[in-house]
Image (tube, rainbow, N blue to C red; front, top):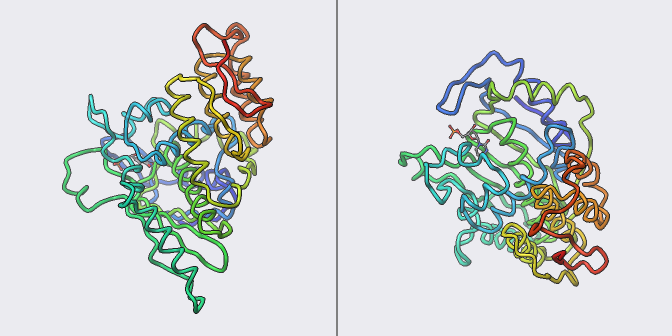
Length: 351
Ligand SMILES: O=c1ccn([C@H]2C[C@H](O)[C@@H](COP(=O)(O)O)O2)c(=O)[nH]1
């Protein structure tokens, strides 16, 4: 099956439509599902990586999971803050503290054994080729490992490889997954990998190219069928896209965001400076703050936070989330997170 789409929402619409009419059924320890064997989804605008529709509004968990990968951690406590059902979904063993199939350590490893770093260096070397032979087919990051086949675990990475292809000033990406759950996994995976694509493109100074997602088993669990039908019935899958990542080396800002992410997740609200950090990244920190405020049912704080956002791209998404909180929980509760001072870009705790 080949799907060609401008946006993630459009790719989801086409994938759900095909899956819901698929007669092919699969049964695994993780449930009954409809399945397509061999699927390729090509997304022309990788910045259109989050769904704006009502029941697929998963921006916070997508962002949280992406930052979990970028932190190089596979701590289950970290990811379950964003995706409560992660243990169950990943097949992690009861009582486990680490996700053995987590992508972060596999992609980023240790400082001198980072596949991400090595792939970037390879692309950089090619781009500097004096004869202009800058195309490469070798910038591949391996996630699924041959040793995974010998493990008796149900937490095995679903993603096999990430490949970056610099071509004519643009950076394309091709990802192969052995297994992908279309309803929950797919939007999260596309978000994370297209975000990494943009990071690498910025790092090596190329424009963003296309994103191609190849899957061995693309499936829709029976338990998600109704929600997939609801998604299609909404009928207004949009063209929402994230703003462009600022040009230049993105890693200092990513480090800044990771420090903020950890502080917000742990409820530590000591002031953090954002001077000199591009509003693109500050907005992402604000989204993380909004997620904490939603958990704290602090509607007023969310409104303040939204007012301070630089980009309007996330506005309708946040508004819907805020509306879902009842007026009864308007007042922040004692000891719960405060707001970000919009004027100074400083994260401050509200007394
Ligand atoms: O990044 C991921 C990780 C997992 N899954 C889904 C695919 C399967 O539904 C399930 C893993 O089950 P197995 O393929 O390992 O049986 O989790 C994804 O969609 N994306």
